Amino acid sequence: MKTISKILALTLLVASTSFAQKKGKWVTLFDGKTFTNWHVYNKAGQPITDKWKIQDGTLVFTGKAKGEKHGDDLITDKEYENFELELEWKVSEGANSGIFYGVFEDAKYSVPYLTAPEIQVLDNERHPDAKAGKDGNHKAGSLYDMIPSASVTKPAGVWNTVKIVKNKGEVSIYQNGTLSVKYKSEGPEWDAMVAKSKFKGWEGFGKYSKGKIGLQDHGDAVSFKNIRIKEL
Image (cartoon, rainbow, N blue to C red; front, side, top):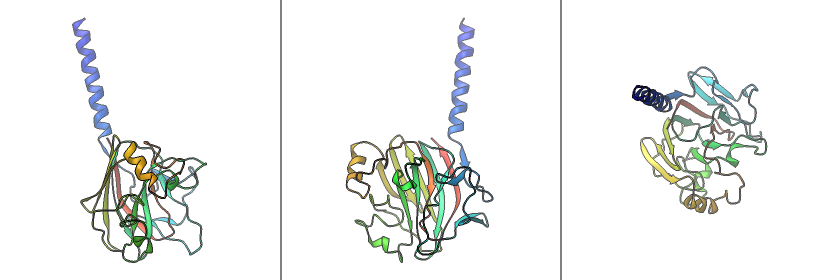
């Protein structure tokens, strides 16, 4: 009986260790060659719009003409809850974009930002949104319209690094190696922040602890690369 118990305990230990290693492994979300792991929001199984291209190992949104409808946001096929996400972004002059997490994909929501918090991607020097909002909470690296960034953003045409760590209701955002924003993503503190933002009263905003990662089509040219994620 003791032998069986020892074998069972050893089996459980090996299984739990294997699971932990699997969760803690970095996974490449963009291989530099294909759109594997991605689709356009609410268009799973359909071809990726030609506005998104792969050029020299980089994921590029080429931009749209003035007045052309936005909304071809790219999102991951898989949902994530607790994770560490790393990527690099670069904007063209005067460009605006964003990085989403917690995207709930459903036909009732036309775009990711209706449910997903956004880390701003912006040309702070030229885009007018940099002067909007409150205390700079529309600038690059900010939790958009909620918490301003404490980090330095590199100018248009230069790569910026971002790391998002979301774990058990807490989120830390690093930009160019500096802690940019830190906050609780649920509970009274979160609810109070939402109530003071443009997202007040939005039915699904910030409600989903598990969701997809998204890259925004805001109509402007933007590039992303070295996208990887590790589940925690």
